[in-house]
Amino acid sequence: MAILAIRIYPDPVLRVNCRPVTEFDARLKKLAADMVETMHAAPGVGLAAPQVGVELRLAVVDVSVGEDPSQVRVLVNPEVVEHSGGLESEVEGCLSLPGISDKVERPLFVTVRAQDLEAHPFELRAEGYYARAISHEIDHLDGILFTDHLRGLRRERARRQLKKLADELQVRA
Ligand code: NI
Image (cartoon, rainbow, N blue to C red; front, side, top):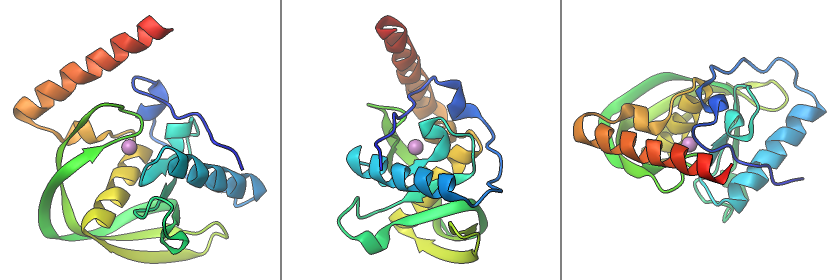
């Protein structure tokens, strides 16, 4: 396994509408394993393939951040098929947007349909923080960042912070 480089805003790969996974081969398994290791090392509760420069509909989630191996979920071609329970507002961050965090409204419950690494379809019902993490990662597969959900003054603040992040990257380059 290997720890992969995490792409940072404004890397254009973060805005790509990723394509479905069609090859359930050894390369996909290796990528998923590397993404889990990268997520744990970061540390983070989720990671989507575009965040490591791969334009595929693949995400990994572990709300235990490596504490409980049974919590690791690999989601291939995931889609939200139902959300319910109203909206909840909690603070979110993103490994690709270092130093930026804000409250984002997400559904309290989501039902997700996905495939595992053997291409077997499954459904998953998640609640609260787990539902939030999954929704955040699925957004990444459509090129959506959590700051896109902010409105009003929060959106303005995020816009300034994102510009700063982009300017800093130029200085480093
Ligand atoms: Ni993220």
